[in-house]
Image 1 (cartoon, rainbow, N blue to C red):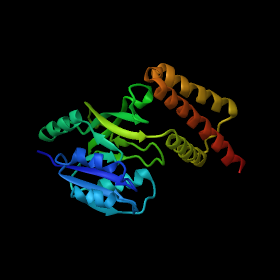
Image 2: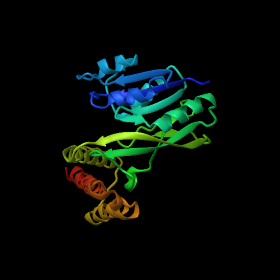
Image 3: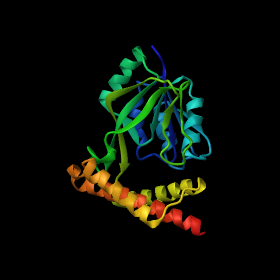
Image 4: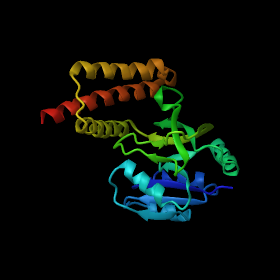
Length: 250
């Protein structure tokens, strides 16, 4: 049987991290938390689960996740965010995988919770994520935003049936703040790489994002939540290009 390290990066995660830890307790052979000097009860909660608690200054998501992956005691890594947890079906699948590790990486369908509702459509479900893998054959990308685990060329991957549960947004105000934050980060990323966009292109991408979320990916079937997710997705795109133009003007 292989041994798995559950790896989580954190900063002031007292609201969510207990659900995450409960889902991996008794499943992972090691729980490693790499914390960015939280000032709330994150550390105390982690220690209740006998987690190994390390700290390092946060520089960016990709580097911090890679740092945590390399600090783990075992090569087989289950990488989770603090506001995620494994479904019961996913837990059972991982138990079986520990008995018979047959691929280099495993993909979960991430089910996102928007203001108390589990999304069934838009790009929020199935939001496929590679999170269980052999660290000798994969690593986290170094993107400032939307970082992901990337498998080496030739690596074998299997899709799992169980969901990765993600409590992403609890209020409209929280969604507005995240939209603003991510739009500015994305604009900076584009600017540093010399990417430009005119108003026409920005408008096209904004409208296309809304159509993709609400119509093509059936967001309308999720009712009000589907409308809000589609609207904020389009708003994020518009703000991203707006802030990109500002950076060039400055």
